[in-house]
Length: 394
Ligand SMILES: Cc1ncc(COP(=O)(O)O)c(C=O)c1O
Image 1 (cartoon, rainbow, N blue to C red):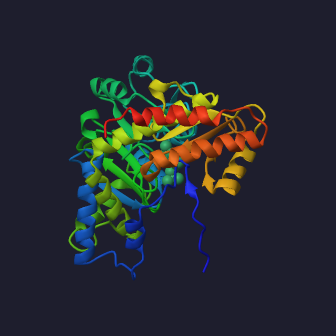
Image 2: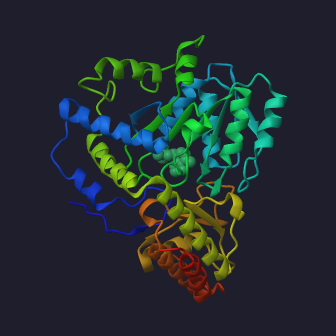
Image 3: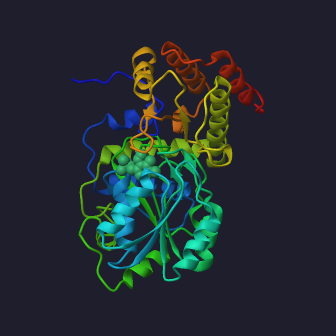
């Protein structure tokens, strides 16, 4: 048996999984239909509605988060139809590729990498293209560590009656996503980020308005599997015995997700958002005190992933290697040519949005930089991070 050594996952996904969720997977084959499974499915859907903060329907599609992104774009965009897609990161680029692949006319909106998308930028783009009826945005751009200010952006969309497709893959469960208050039409996420579960399904919330728009399409949605209308038809028809639609479900993954969602709701969403915000702040303060330049200004810095410039004298690849080999900690470099070699990212989502993990990472990072000859200060980093935690009421 090939058992993996446990290393601390300080990457922006996959994340650490709670023991109870791991145990939930260590059981005989779980049949994805029949009374027991229907009960589990309903429980998971109920928990997800609370976490998405919605009364709308949610679907769980076998695959990863990208499958949910693509299902949303396929449903919302007809061939030749315009879709506004602000850039600014690797996952925003993915949305553009998906929309172009289903025949959409992508209207790009330039956003500087590591900078936020501001509501007035959306207003100007919509003024310039009044025929745009749909926009797709990444809430938390994991590739850069920016959280876009969605409240104002969603407000612009609501006032203009523009459908909003929002990727919350690395925010849902760690950063507030009030889907119904924001009037989201599609909101997508995945299990293996702030939801602390193994990957295996893409999650998608769909509004009533989105369903009506799908029904009114001039052209049918292409495809069978990533076709939400088709999935809904099967889910409705099979709901009493085979609730997740027409295909086999990764039922062990769903068993783990059920446990993780219970844990998340037991902690309480507000407590969770506070915990992620506090840990992100402490980490940023620690890094700054160490002498490291952060890539995103605090007002738009993500609470689930922090990006920073590699100090002079060190490299991204060697730092990642030393962190793994010397400290059994996994951190991330950039996947994108634009930022590759220039920055590193530390994820602090779910279980690792935790004081002890972050103090350890700060110490280890300082040592890995020092080993390469970079001049950084570890005690200052500890003091600054601890100061943030100390300030908190017990
Ligand atoms: C913001 C964002 N969107 C989409 C994805 C794609 O997720 P997956 O690999 O689960 O398809 C990721 C993965 O990190 C992400 O961070």
